[in-house]
Image: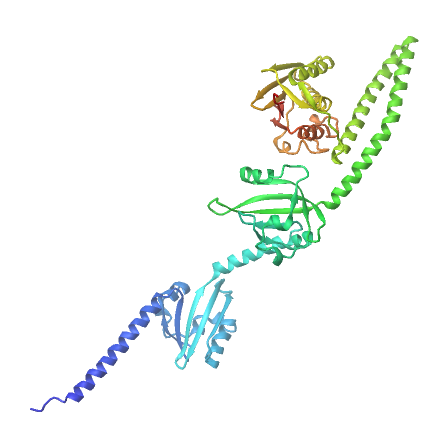
Length: 485
């Protein structure tokens, strides 16, 4: 019996080991290709599918057995002539790897592709990036919208570090986007509040989620800009505050025009006072003369004329006050006085002139405040006369005084036509008038409540309204109490 050929056996064992290693290697490669997140296909030189992984099945919606052995361009004839077709051929021709992304109109999807040519054919790894592209397009759209807005739009994080700065902001402030991104808003803008406490905007932003008001900002060149700012919180999908966005409008020219208008109103009102005062004097003189002559009917006509002159005099005085307030020229003479007794005296005066309404006063305790009695009288006379004027079918006005802690609050409630809710936030603006139905229209310029607001604010107090249409209104005024020495 021949002895076994050890060298031949060794050769067979080596060949078997190599085949096993190749098989093992193929298995490992296939396992890897089946587990990658992208689709993978292999194509031979005749453009026939020779391998399709599971993810490619999912992306195409076609089973691999329906693809293997078939030509790519027979399966996708609509792709002939597209960028996909051109890039596939370019990779095969040059034997250079290529990467690209494009929109595939027949499937209405976006894909990113990596092409790896070899002497055996072409390997392709691809992914569906439609959602990402849509998100990018949406972000680009939003960015373009922000850039196209005529107001300066500025976005910050919760620490008020600038994250976004549109073209209008560059125009308004003189700083480019590159110069401000990552900087603190307070370092770039420098702000001053002409009509509001310095920290009110932060307080309102935290409690209400927004703030709107006038701000003085400094531009890059050192000049100042009057700005109407509107600041709102930005929240993520979970409702967590992640920053703030401001839409700022340059009102510098408008404020200058407003100042010129106020100066004109002030000058015109001042000039009108002299002839109106003289006219009122002549009217009263003529009225007394006619009464002495027994011409009472004619005297009554002059009495009505005198009443209209009183209205005109008050209007001129109000316009002068508005002008002075806008230019900061109102002087206040403040002193300590008994608030309850003072309100009682005002009510008595109004009550005599308005016999059809009962003005009921409720007082808790005696209290004193520091203020300008003449100016504060304007406020409460205005509130009481408004309560009577806007409740022609009611018979009662309630006034309540309540000292609490270090402030006193007085409320004036009527039972008249009420004020729609959409007007509550603007009713104290200059020249703002509530317009509802024609039946509820009353004469006036809309300056009484504005003057009242400015006077109360000058006394470090607050004025606000609570009302419902058809159910009356309640105006509140709170003022700081005088501290005992």
